Length: 93
Image 1 (spheres, rainbow, N blue to C red):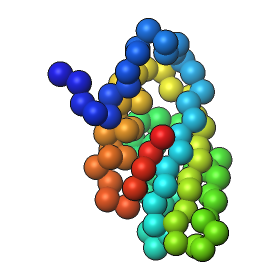
Image 2: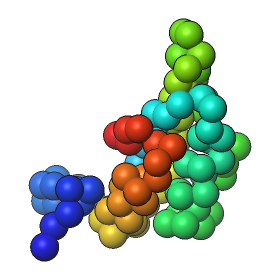
Image 3: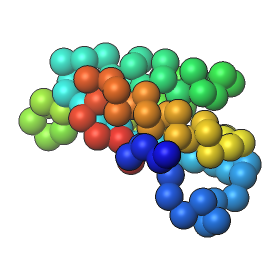
C-alpha cells in the first residue's frame, strides 16, 4: 500500500543520486534544526552546514534548502513521511 508521501514513477529515479529538498515553515520554529534532524535520521552523513535558509519578505516564514546523496527510494519515502508528520513543517518538496 502506498502512502501519500511515497515517491511516484519509480522507473524515472536512478540511485544513488543527489537529492534536492525544500521545506517551508513558520519562522518561530527552529526549522533548520528540525529539517536537519529529520534528514540525518535517513542520511546519517548529512552535513547540516550545507543547509540554506531564506526568510520570507515579511519574516513570518522561512524556506530551507538542502541537497544530499541518497541511495534508495526508502530514504526518500522516509524523509517525506517524517516531514509530513512534523507540525512545524508546512510543506516539503
